[in-house]
Amino acid sequence: SGSRALLVETKGFAELEQALGGLEKELTRRAVARRALKKAADPMRAEIEALAPEDEGVLKSAIAVGTRANFGRRKSKAQREQFGDVVEVFIGIDPAKETAQDKVVAYSIFVERGTSDTPAQPYFRPGWERDKLQALERIKAFLGPEIEKAAARQRKR
Image (tube, rainbow, N blue to C red; front, side, top):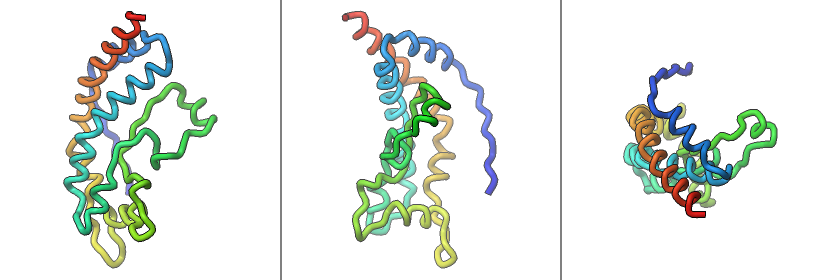
């Protein structure tokens, strides 16, 4: 399936990026961005969870917000050099919720896309589609106060 480009005009992010860059430490900048992104992602996670089909409830309970793709794999040195100071947050299936009996990571894909034997029951894509623009606004709304709190802590030192 082909991907569709989404063009969105944003306002205020350049100023937020500049304010974030004004924080002294890289670790602080990353932590501030990570907190804001996780807060902004949680309503989308809840939307996706609400749309997930409920069989035994394992799939719904495994949908989580994490700071690394596949909730554990770190970026390689080459990737860090290519993308630089980037903070990412992911919504996905938390492998820690998987048991030997419940292969939730594997079957979540089959639920979303279907198989030759079972129809697709999309929940991730519709959750993303419903909430993607609001998520941008939440990022902006959460990032500003997080930067202000970090800057205030920085001034106290």
